[in-house]
Length: 164
Ligand code: FES
Image (tube, rainbow, N blue to C red; front, side):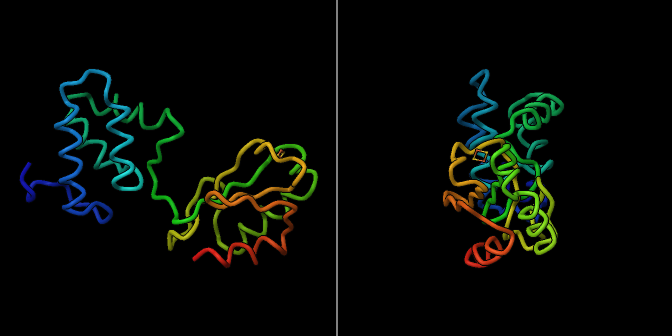
């Protein structure tokens, strides 16, 4: 597709639209490939803006309601921008009784971000999970792939400051 007909979106560069076109052309004749297509496009852009979903439906010749339905059904897809660092707080019983509420409140007040949100500067995204399988280290916070155990509201701010 010609560059001048790409939808305008601040997070999707012309180079990205070119890569997306490539993904579409490799998959448009493969029935059932839409999940793989969404996944590849999310890898390219970082999330799935609505303009991208519309573009994919058109390219894949599928109703946009169907593609939108798939993108919202699976938790691996995000329709909102993600932060550079993903914070997972554990709301399992062991972590909760050992003070996760205070940790969550501290993150919320320091970074003005609730669960499911991303900070305005896109530094952090915050996600809540049920038991990370490390209850012996409760309360546990995971940042990207790093596990931070025996956390506290005071310690979490010192930890997060190290993630630029
Ligand atoms: S309850 Fe948090 S790791 Fe198990």
